[in-house]
Image: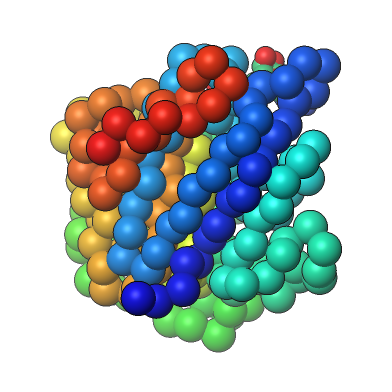
Length: 213
Ligand SMILES: Nc1ncnc2c1ncn2[C@@H]1O[C@H](COP(=O)(O)OP(=O)(O)O)[C@@H](O)[C@H]1O
Ligand SMILES: [Mg+2]
């Protein structure tokens, strides 16, 4: 069996009070994990703990075998990890394609035209970002993250502001990407149906994660 892209061991975290403790999980290539849980349960905090941005209070996170809070993660952040947020941050003065080109230039990759078709944005890609709908902008921001060809994708409610059909299309695209690139997906969602498209589902509740699928 291949080694995990991501591993959490005995993770605990809280701001004023403890949000969770003893969180353990592993994510392997071609695998996807969905996290469900009520608002305020700590899903985003967990995602930030796992994605190099917020040190946990206890426990250990390894990405590609590297203990991320005891080593230099600059290279991991630049190329290995891709993060998709609910609210995208595109350069507003540029076209959608120019936004993708910024990423491909920095990461020495190229835009995957097939990906634009899958996300159904190929016809608007040369328009200004401000001319696109919110849903189209969200898909451009997802294409931008995937254009960097990350091995590990973190997505915090990536479909939160999309209609049902588009949300399903986005989730399918992310999962297909993991299969084609030996990548892993860790996704926070409110939607149990979307979660079911992933290999594993956990619920964050009562300060721990419980596997549902
Ligand atoms: N930077 C912060 N400082 C203090 N408390 C925070 C901060 N970020 C989030 N919280 C609190 O931590 C709890 C969990 O937040 P979060 O991880 O965003 O949950 P979720 O994503 O499940 O809604 C909430 O009560 C929130 O108000
Ligand atoms: Mg959140």
